[in-house]
Length: 431
View 1: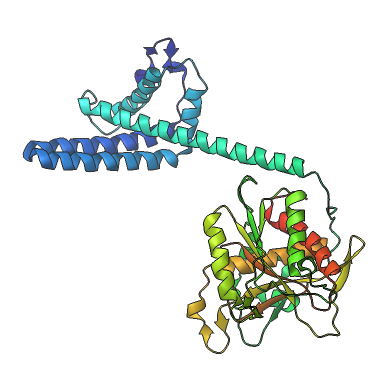
View 2: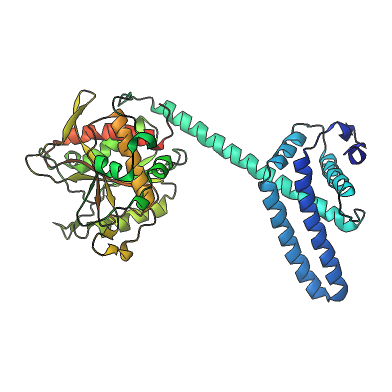
């Protein structure tokens, strides 16, 4: 190192700079690739015409840029190098480039390779490495700035929200982990209802992988993040008055309010009527109609990263799905999954869902969180054969809030702990 670095550049003495050996090796590997390509181009130039030389030069230029960029991006020591020169503001651009050339030249001089570093093409090699290093640096700076802006925006949105609608819960139930959940079959037996028409395999939802899967509501609240809609918008409760606020739409309104005002998310509540055809209730076509409407919203607002289809279940008239949370009578909820699979005939090809694992993992995490913070609030996760539009994005949930035997007040109350669970599982909040 001393022979190549013991010299002055401006007022900088490079014998005081300690460059990691790993950095030298990476830079030299890049340089050697460039030198080999450069030499090949020169040889080709001697035996071919101008057009061929031009084509080869273009190809080589593209290739060298790709190689340099890939190595720089994946090199932690390169990052250290860039940080070093950036932290020494007195170093000029020319000095930085000359330092880079000194490092490469010194290594080549002490290696088994022999190259003529006085060749004019060698300057092009150094320039290419230097340009790629700066390009990555600029990208990283931009990325950091964007992340900081997003974090600041989220902090401000939470501060602005400041309205506490739902008290944050403490752990009151069982905290489940991969260790105490047991096998896949144990999880099914404890937390799931799988209908007789479908089949769920351990490979569909490896427990440890499902628990470790990260789910996040992305972006800042400057743009829409969450979509709430209702495939069956006409679902009512035992004391509904005919006003939409007393139907499942009212539950969606309440969920939107808590997610927006308490947690600061940007929420779109789509109250479109998807289960009416020519003025008549028609739930056979509802999923097809909802799919068209939801896709239009997702196309218009690509920043949406969570899609919630909020339903109300239908149960025996003697069944009352209710618990008490925060002193309020609260309807129990149920997370609903579709497997796109019949037990008798296997996978339903025309209902293929690329996000099946994500669907299952997200609803499992929601169930596990509910067991810890709101024991008794959630019913067993329900699994049936069809798809239910859960392939609209990687983070989709179909949630049944209460049933026709609940009051609409009980159902609206359920929206409050549901919002808390969504934020706990997907908002990155700390306990």
